[in-house]
Length: 593
Ligand code: BES
Ligand code: ZN
Image 1: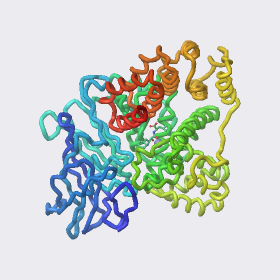
Image 2: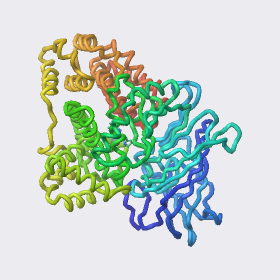
Image 3: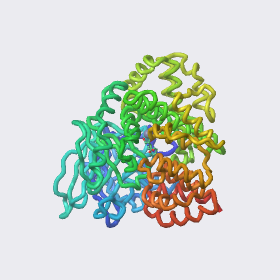
Image 4: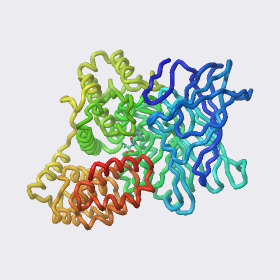
């Protein structure tokens, strides 16, 4: 028996399901998804089949069609893995059906009260399966290595709409009065972490023949305006990476507790509403999730130990799209902002250098705990180093071959390296890939991205500590990314006078761009700048995006004066956070006495 993934009971010598058929009823009262999951095999199989499950109540297992009972056994609860569900399949099994229910505490689902939505009239449900939470929704081989196509029928209360990471295949009255049934089809094989479902009061606006945006009625027009440029992005990405293979690129704007910026669920990217800055300044997250359609959803990591292959490539691809659309200066700013995130993560993992390798070893480590900017930014810099060494044209040609060779598969770092060596012999050695992949921290040959403009802005931020204040001229000229670079290069603790100066001159507390706002609130919190407290409370109470919660809470935790504020706000707000966000902030606050 070979288990290939430290985070899954998936065993590659056992039968491998290639298609799922899901029939699910969404019950907001009990916060339970219940129904049937059928796993289909490409040919008749028999014997032991180990599935992942977490918090699932398994009611019945039978052979599809014949109805013959299938013996099953649930193993003990393991903290990261959950419970192994072992089935013993009889001879010539084409498919196996499992009647089951999820638990109200399923990590992969967040159930929102009407008060947590914009409309405040209907409840909302969304899933977040990456990295290893699909098993809290469906009993399955929950390893990225085991790709599946799927079909689903989802029954929801009348008046609500269901969307999935799949193509819509019709809807009609549900089996129970007062319900509606939505059908979906995802014909292409995807890793289980890309299974996605959301249910709420939703409307959509068409943005192009192949793209529309979904959101709550009160948000949908703002979302349509913010993301109006999506078709130009898809076209730019196609020019770089080849045809878009997923037919549609639809997006869903979630309620503010969504714990990430975006999630590349195929055919239905999930996005945080904090992207709706009102000036299209945060659409790089859309470029990122779109880029995953190639670097990720088409070719992804076999396990979380190779996460950099997924995210590092995607950050690099996102910045190539950005550069194609908005020029080199815009891309340089994105790299600079990424550099700051990278430095922060390297510092945070100072005592866990093993998590700063690109090729990680995560046996016994929860992928959510290993999450950081390192696979993203160190990974993207390795890709950029390979590109610079190979030459742009040669590298893009290589990339297209790579995606042709591995499309719809999930691969390891070792497979990637073997392919590079085959196509571009000697390249890995020339960039010292070994150091990038297997040694902690940043290699000395890491590419640097600079521009004269950014150098000037960074210099002004450094000069700030010496008392030099930028004049109105340069500041008025900065775009949002440049302002962010400036703020990131300031010391975290500022005098109250300096805080007031910055706030007045740059209108920071009132900003609608959450990247700038969050950066500023970290400075304000660390500096105990009271005029910003109401805004800090408001943001922490409303927004559940972990990228913002972590540093703001950490900044508040640093000083006694603000620590009480952190605890008070957390006590009020945490019930509305996603469970992962709640755990994360509990961890942050636990560091302080
Ligand atoms: N796939 C990730 C989000 C993710 C990673 C969720 C790991 C769960 C586990 C997504 O593509 C992503 O990276 N989102 C970023 C935005 C991006 C511009 C770096 C985010 O959420 O901030
Ligand atoms: Zn990503």
